[in-house]
Length: 328
Image 1 (tube, rainbow, N blue to C red):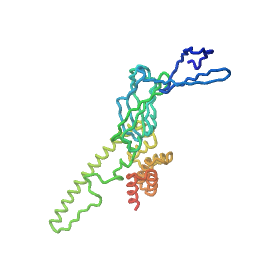
Image 2 (cartoon, one colour; image 1 turned 45 degrees about the vertical axis):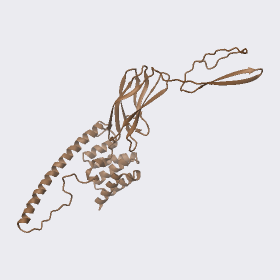
Image 3 (cartoon, rainbow, N blue to C red; image 1 turned 90 degrees about the horizontal axis):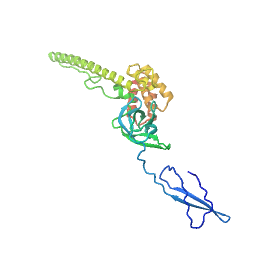
Image 4 (cartoon, rainbow, N blue to C red; image 1 turned 135 degrees about the vertical axis):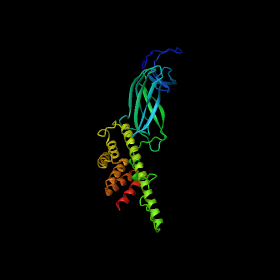
C-alpha cells in the first residue's frame, strides 16, 4: 500500500523517497516499475527487490502427540492430540492423511477449528493405507492471520498394522490346514493282527479316538471363544459401534458371518459388490459365504471376479481351488 504513487516533475540528481507497505507471500522478489516521459516519449524502467520473509517467532506451531493406530474392519483408525505450541492462534485447523494414503469416511478430515496458543484438541482420522505401506503421513494444516495455509507432516509407523478386511483370514476351513491336535481327515487305523494283539490294538484305538475327540471338542470350544471375543472387538472398532443394523453393508456382512448366518452375510456382501464392482475383498467374502451355503457355481464366479481385480492374491486363489474341490 499504496499500489502506485505519483511523483510529478523530478529534477536532475534529486532523489525522492516513496514508501510502500508490502505483504509478501513467499521469498520471491518484488518488482517495481517506474514510468516517466522525456518529451513526448513514454519510458518504463523496472527493478527487482529481493524479499526474505523468514519465520515468525510468534506464529502458531502445531505438533501431534499421543498417537494411537488401530486396524479397523475396512480401514485404519488413527487417534491423537494436536497442540498449538506457538504464540498466535491457529485458525481452521484440519487433520487428515497425505497421499498415497486414502482418507475414507467417517473421518476423512477432522476439523478442529480455532486452536489458541498452548491449547490442544483431540482428533480421529480414518484411512486406507497404500498397498504394502509401512509408513504414511498425517497432514495437519491451519491458516495464519493473513489467510495463508501452513501444513505440517507427521509420519505414522504402520509396521504390523493392516486393515483386516479379508474375510478368509477368519475362516480356517477355507485357508489352511486343520488346527494342531486334530486327526487329519480320513485317518484310519487298520489292525490285522490275530488274537490278543488285535484286541490290544482295538482297545488302544478306542482310547485314542476318545482322547482325540475330547481334544477336538476342547479345541473347537476354545476356537469359538476366540471367535466370539474377536467378533465383539471388531464390532466395537467398526463405525457402527457394534450395532448389526447400522454401519456399512460390509460391516453388517462381517457381523452376520461371525454369527454363522451365511445367507444374510451373503446378501450384505452382494450389496457391496453391486455398489462397488471393483471391491475384490467383497467378491471374495461373498464367494466364501456361497461356498458355505454349497452354492459352488456362484461362488466360483465370485472368486473369479476377485482374481480379475487382484490376480496375485494367494488367498483368493486358494479359496477358489477349495471351492472347486467341493464342487466335484
